[in-house]
Image 1 (cartoon, rainbow, N blue to C red):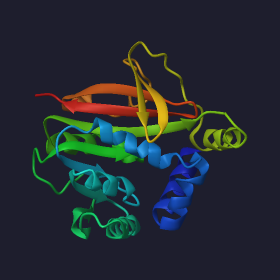
Image 2: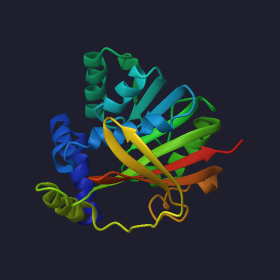
Image 3: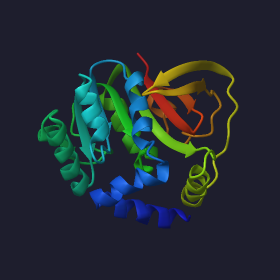
Image 4: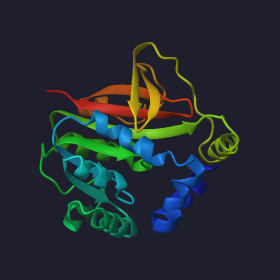
Length: 235
């Protein structure tokens, strides 16, 4: 799919919570929420900022896990949806979610231990975004980006969904793991985490330019792969 067409599709989703829910569930075989929650085991510290909270599901997860959280979301429709999610799940308050831009965060310097973003749009590649992330992170803090995912062609349904993902996102390059393999379990799902020092994904996020040390991880189960880029603020 052409980038301009893909951008228009995503902008349409951000304006309708019901389309967004459908698009983040059915085409991904119901795994979207599992992939979002991969963030939880990578957070260090207590104070967390989410960029682009969407429907607010991960934000509610983090609040429920005891983290002190705030969120910035550009879409007014998603701000409203996320506030509804917090209310329905009885966590946090509506004031934790502010409408704004990742390129101009309304928070003081060194305010957060972690900044998280799951399946972000092009704003994550903007140097102004990463400059703001570096500014609000405390020394040793982490930017954690769930950058993308890929269903594997297993079973009866997933090959069809794999083709759909290929049409929307295009083919993904594969990187061979060289170190750091870990076997883990989350929500009943066995998966392996590989550290990929020379990963192609996430290279357009200008981490080093803003004194953030890069770490690239590929998490693989029997049904999917997820790609995570982490930037740790140097002391």
